[in-house]
Amino acid sequence: MADDELVEPVGTPEVAEPAPEEATDPQQPIGFTVKPPRRRQTLVKDPETVLHKLVKKFNDDIEDRAVWTEQRVQRTAKYRGWREQKTYPWLDASNAHLPVIMTDVQRTADTLHNAVLSVRPVMNAKAVSSEWAEKETTVDQLLDHQVFVENKGEERVGNLINSYVEDGMWISYNPYIKEKQKLTRTYVLDYPDPGQSWDGTILAALQSYYPKSTVLPGTRAPWNWTIKTQHELTGEVVNVKAEVYHDGDDAQVQIVCHHDEVIFDGPAFIPKELEDIVVPGRCENLQPQCMANPTGAPHVFMIEYPLKAKPKILRRSKVQRRVRHKIPRTIRKRKSS
Image 1 (spheres, rainbow, N blue to C red):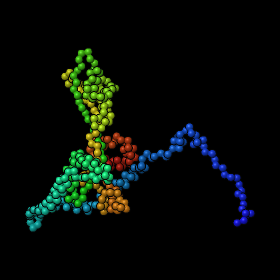
Image 2 (image 1 turned 180 degrees about the vertical axis):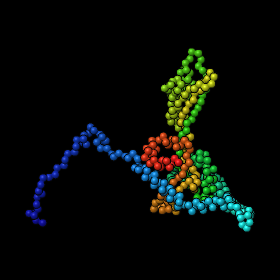
Image 3 (image 1 turned 30 degrees about the vertical axis):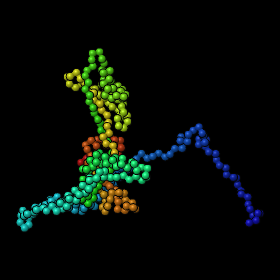
């Protein structure tokens, strides 16, 4: 192309607009001018629709495995020796049970149980690096303690083996549980001597019960106190509430101290019965369904039998109240009936 064919650009050049002073102001942090989007309060937009879908899936799964449930009942009846009254060739004819299946099942279960418990620890850790090899024994002892001491391993392993031998499969629910319960300690204290006050007497007694702790008077002092102490094992700060009562005609008072104590903190394995786990038909395992596990379960329903106090605790939670008032009235009546 010749030089005379070049044409100069026509128009005014574009000039970048200056950035607002807010973004370039070094005195103002960028967090006040640029903020990330807010997270949604709940992942469930319509609890009523989700509830109806879950109930429909649960009922469909129950109907889908109706044949399997009937066959399992028949198999259990043969194993246990549940026999019907025999009317052929005459009424009340002999209907003896030959415990062939029972003998084989119990022999196999005993063999597996003895094989598992013959060597302790049952599970052995293998370090991926040579520098961690010295920790293998510690991990082995920790796993053995968690399984057989904290979780009553001998009994639960026996239940899993029985489920495997009788039904051909076993299911274990393995959550991490941290459970707290209110621990109460009661101390008996004599009346103070003449000339001594209740405040000094009770304060001295509490300091002797909880040494190296901070004792503060409560709203109804000297009849209630707050104690901040340190846990002996974990080192966490524990708040203890002490209340003073007079019970009886003796010249004595009771100091009742309440605090929350962790009674279980660690992994747990809980054997589950087959009728308490509901999954779609043709599922070979309870792991999530994916390309590497095509026979997994797209969803799993686990039936629970909570204690009487559990629904009360859930009813007091804000999450359940927020979801509960959105459930239609017809569903509430059906659930209560």
